[in-house]
Picture 1 (cartoon, one colour):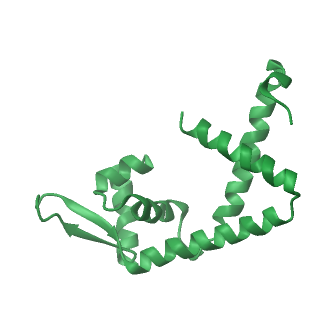
Picture 2 (picture 1 turned 90 degrees about the vertical axis):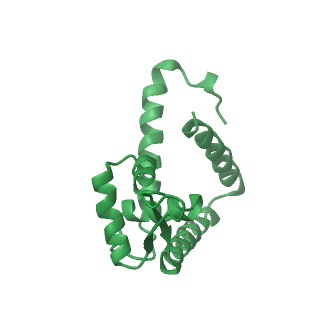
Amino acid sequence: MSTPDDIPDQNLGATASEVRMATFRLARRLRAQRAIDTMSDGQFAVLAALKVHGLHTLSELADRERVTAPSMNRTVTRLEESGYLTRTTDAADRRKVNIALTRAGLAVVEETVRRRDAWLEGALAELTGTERETLARAAAIMRAMADR
């Protein structure tokens, strides 16, 4: 395996481009594995955020997903109309509206995650042990890069 010192600086641009393209292609393949084909990636991201982080206000969701409040309101309204989340007035602060997953919304998230994990597990099963170890190390490096 090469180390950063093995890659000359002049190749960093090409390496960056290759990593970007491979990451996006893999992400696209994983996103295709979903419980509901008609649900957008943005809609699923809202459901997943609610599962992982719990109740949110509209503005908190908009900030988390880096979209405008009006755009998030449209997404939340569609998900609410489909029965995947609810809006409830906060008991302590009646001006605040909390958004939460419903059982149906949780089921969508869990089934989508199951499908994505199953697809990726199948793809990993086709690799050699060394290739899987390399990807595991790369995943840790990519996670650290994303956390910067």
